[in-house]
Length: 102
View 1: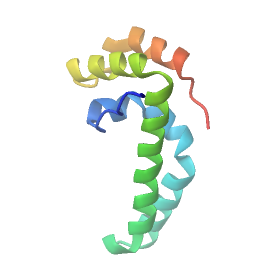
View 2: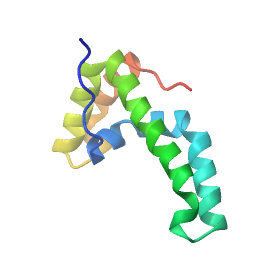
View 3: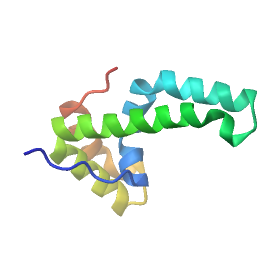
C-alpha cells in the first residue's frame, strides 16, 4: 500500500516549489490572468480550484514515486524554517529521485 501523502504544509509546498512551478504553470497563469482581470474573489474560484487540484495531484504523484526523499526534504525544511540553504543535501537527493518534469 502506498504511503499517504503528507498534508500540504508550508514545508511540503516549499519542497515541491520547483515541481509546482513546472507542472502547474498553465493553471497558475490562468488563475493569475483571472485575478488581474477581476478583483472580485468569486470570479476566479474555478481557476483557484484547478490550481489546488494540480498541486494535490502533484503531491500524491511525487509521494508515490519517492516518499522517503520527499519526507527527508520537507522535514529538513520544516526544521530549518523553510531555508533552502540548510537543506541542499536533502534537496539534491529528492530532485535526483524525482526530477522536475511536466
